[in-house]
Image (tube, rainbow, N blue to C red; front, side, top):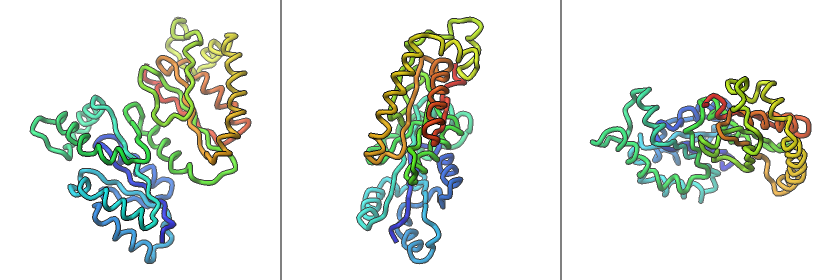
Length: 288
């Protein structure tokens, strides 16, 4: 049976693969972590032979299984040739973040290098370079909390579900922390006067009514909303016509605390009125 939805979660140790597996389990996937790559075809054959109630499968695969790098190309290619629909999600994070996460957990890295942890991280990144290149999606988790990563994985898993409305994911962020890789549409709102330089607003964030009032009072903000909403009204039907069922809109300012948050909140309200299928995440609101 080839009616399965199969997701392979792979990537760097410490990048959040266990969190991703947990998120998929929460939305109905049958999940197996640390699945040996050689057993995958046999597992799918057994499932096709009788466990028909399982339609969604997720497997965690990485260098914990030493045969993974040697065999993944051959096995994934063969399964796709046989008609299985398989999606590969590759999770990664910056070297600095991985070092920090390992120092906090004190776990042993699966790749041992005599030079220590940093050499082990670099060696793993090099060994997994090939599967990263063929992955359907690469997710950088460096600036994501556990909850944000779970939300992102769930949104990704649900995006293929047919719906009358397009699923909109709104995300505020700070440019100083990097542009979100999952972005479809990006808007830079650093042209708006910055509340950060107003003493009574500096410690607040864009969800506070005082900050919202400050951000929204400027003529350029009002004109921006008028033009941007008009652009979205034009684009959304065109995206839907092309079969796009989801859209991620990222709103960025310098630190991701004031302007981008306030603007994303207004765009969220706009979509709630006209679309309904919308989520909102403030990635960097606690960073600065």
